[in-house]
Image (cartoon, rainbow, N blue to C red; front, side, top):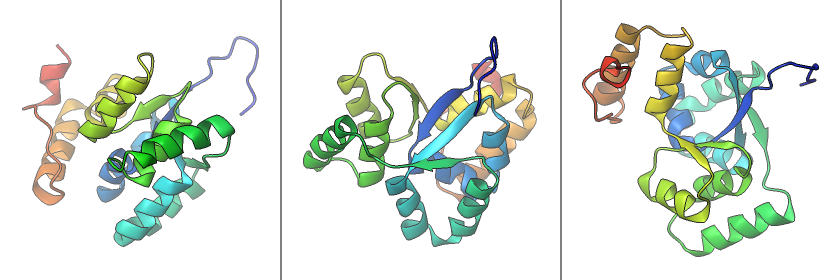
Length: 174
């Protein structure tokens, strides 16, 4: 992306599989594409999606093809060191470790509590978002109305075993 003088550059969000899968399952990666952010996943996250969620492969490939999500690799020495040290704990999977490794300077989107706790202890300045934070941003940016967000929340709970601890997104917008 070329940045023009005075142009606002969108924030980059590195997402792990947990957040991405939530949107893939309901076939709504268009919501990610519509946000005023760029979304990237590591090759480890991409592999987790395609290996563990084969029914989402086509949706993932379409989202990458449409530019809603782009892929990156754990590549720099610093990233490789972070990835290796987090993997060595044996507490997180490769997707979470790789997202943590490349998230420096970016926003991290992750729902896993253990991974979130580890990320917060590793970097006090790292901004972390969960799925519900992204949905709130989608409401604020006019991509969703509250009723539709609540329908999505209900679909996640009833069809995909992903529950948010709130009655309605309206409660969070007060």
